[in-house]
Length: 216
Image (cartoon, rainbow, N blue to C red):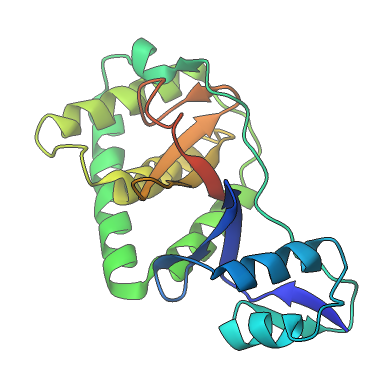
C-alpha cells in the first residue's frame, strides 16, 4: 500500500517531534510519540510495524494512493543573510495604494474564505509570475508596507501582512517565496516573505528561530 499526505497538510520535524500545519482546519499540532515513530517509518518506506497505517490513516493526515508513497517533511530555505527592510525606499502613492488594497484583500480572504483558499489563490498567482522585476519596485513596496506599519503595528499581523505583500510583489513580477514557519519551546508560528537569502517582510533576524512548515 502506498500513501500520500492529505491535501492541505504539511509538516516539519522540530527536534524529535513532527509539527503539522492543517490549512483546511487552520491549526498546528503534534503527533503522539507512537504516531511520530510511525511517520518516521513511513518516510523510510518501512511500514512494517503492525498498527502504523491505522495510526496515521486514523489521524486523517495521510490517505492511500495507487502511486509510490510521497510523504516527506517540508524542505529548508536558504539562511537569511540580509533584508530589503534595510534598503526600503520612499514609496510612491501608487505603491501605497497597492499595499492598502492587498492588505484588505488578504484580511478578507483569510478571515472569510479561509487559509486554504488564500494559499491556493496566491499559489496560482505565483505560478504566473515570470520574474521581469525591478529592484526599485521591491524597495518602494517594502517602504509602503513600513509606512502602513506606522499606523497598524506589524506585530501579530504577520500572516495577513505577508499574504498581502506576496500579492503586491506578484503585481510587479517579483519572484519570491512565502514561508510559514514554526518553533517549539514555547510554540510559535511566523509567516514571512523571502527572496533568495534576503527577507522582504521583516528585518534579517526575525525569521531565524522558525523552521519552515509550508513554502510557496
